[in-house]
Length: 314
Image 1 (cartoon, rainbow, N blue to C red):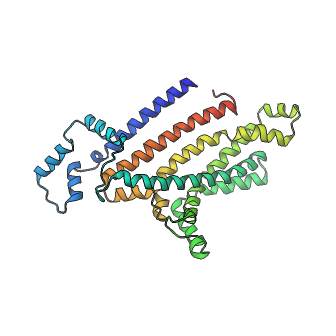
Image 2: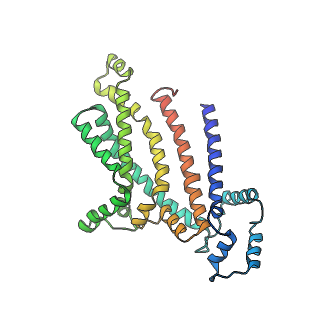
Image 3: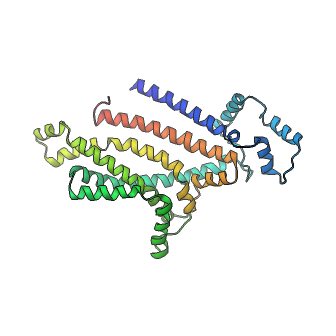
């Protein structure tokens, strides 16, 4: 376990460094001089004096080697300085952190909803493979994969907000505002979670320890609850983390449609406005600081559960 911890931690650090360097290079991947882009974001007009560009380039250290610039940028970021937004001229941190809190709330609600729906469906289908219930659940959940968020969101708004007037169409004011966005994000995870739970239940039910538990005097229901269900839920830990990371960066469409002031909407606006510092700060926080770390943590949890519940991993 110690060797696994060291290996995964090393992989995490390398992944974070590579991803952060890719984010740092965003201004250089896009056409144009970064110093000129900064000036154009502050000063109207197409003609800019070359001396002004050169002075800004020197003051920001843009003449230094890329390695030096990256180390300085990473050090500032780790100290909490994400720079200033080109558009609002306010610290990027003051925009990223509130937006991140909104997106985290939305993603957690979506995943909790997905787990609450998929667990009973997956267990029911896994305990009776090939039955009518199994076929209906599998068909229904697989259909969710073919429903993209940009189609689901308007349909939900049309039905629950405009026709039935049960929920608000957009915004982020109270818990009711989060229902439709969370439901939209939860549909695809429900399909994958249900399939994973079903497969895990089927594999666990076919294992040798189930007949052994029955031979020790346990009833069928006790054997299922003590040995089948816990073993069948192990794959869900890693899958939930993968979807958590994916929804953090993939909530752009949903947040734009429902006017949710989260990270997806913030990054969308940053790209549309060519606000490079805001885009860099948002991507680093979401993709690097959270998505990579959550996925790594899930590996530890999955390995622990596999050892304590489902036996040692190979």
